[in-house]
Each structure stands twice: as structure tokens, then as C-alpha cells.
Amino acid sequence: MLRLLNFWILLIAFLNSNIQVYGVKVIRILLIVVGLILTEKVGNRLISGLMGRIPGTWHERRIKTLRGVIQNLLRYALYFVGAIMILSELNVDTRSILAGVGIIGLAAGIGAQNLVRDVVTGFFILFEDQFAVGDYVNIAGVTGTVEDMGLRVTKVREATGDLHIISNGEIKQVVRLHTPRDDE
Image (cartoon, rainbow, N blue to C red; front, side):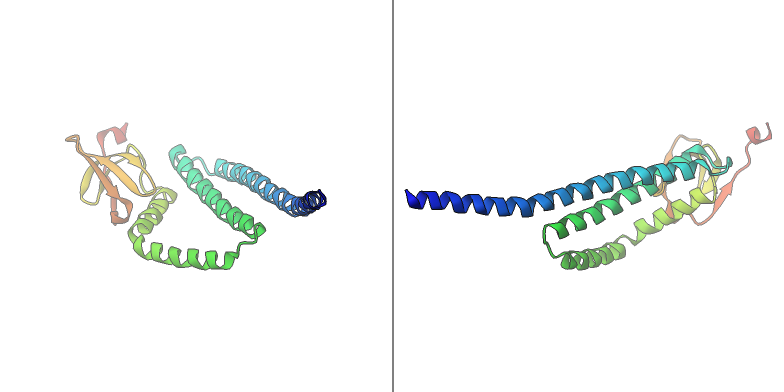
């Protein structure tokens, strides 16, 4: 009977000490998550507010594209920082994770050069307002109407109805062609 009583006393003492230690960790993790959510909401509002102040010459589609890209970058950066902070709270050594992410990032950067080139070129096409949806253009040897633009690809429909999907990295020169409706 005395052994059973000692067992319960030791178990209660063990649970009390662990509840205090893990309770503090859970509260810290919850604070990290709440802080990240609030940071994302404030960041998204700031991004939307700043994008709303872009001069009227920009097309709404370009503004939406840029807003979405910047908000996604913010979200992924916050996810990464939050994951590292939570792992640190759980006493996981994050130095090796950060080193591994750096190596993986380098390998992905080397392997995804064309993707990065397409996205960077697409960003500058949108930023410099080189052409817009509905423009009649000659791009990469294709003449037609721009049907859709994104950061990675541009879609141009020829008069024959053929749709060409052109990687933005392939666009070296853009010619905006004159159409009779431009005179109207």
C-alpha cells in the first residue's frame, strides 16, 4: 500500500513539473502563432494600401497580380520564420535546418534558373507596362492579341484562333502593332 501511495505522489510531482514546463512552451507557441497571424493581416493591409496608391495608368489586372505575388511572398516568409521559432521553442536545433534550407535553396536556384528568369521578366513586363491584355502585339515571333498575362507566361491568340503560351523569359522584344480601332 505504501508503494502505491509513493508511486502516485511521484507521478503527481512529475506531472506538475512537466505541466509547468510544457504549459509555458504551449503559451509561447500560441503567442508566436497569434503574432504571425496578426503580422500577416497587417502586412496584407499595408500591401493593399500601398498598391491602391499606384498611379491610374496602371491596369487593375497588373495591380492585382503584383499584390498577390507580394502577399504570397510575405505569407511564405512568415510561415518559414514561424516554423523556425516554434521548433526553437521545442528545443530543436534549427541551425542544421537553416543550413540545409540554404543548400536546398542553392540547388533549387541553379535548377530553376529558367523559372526565375521567367518570373523576373514577367515582373518587369508588368512593372514597366510594356503591353496589356487586349493589345495587338508581336512577341517572340507570334502576332496576335494578348489574352492573358502572368508572372511566368503570356498568352497570345493569333487571328487564326491559335493560342500561343510564351514564357516571359523568351520575350526579348515587344512590338505593339497599330490596329484600325486604335484610331477611334
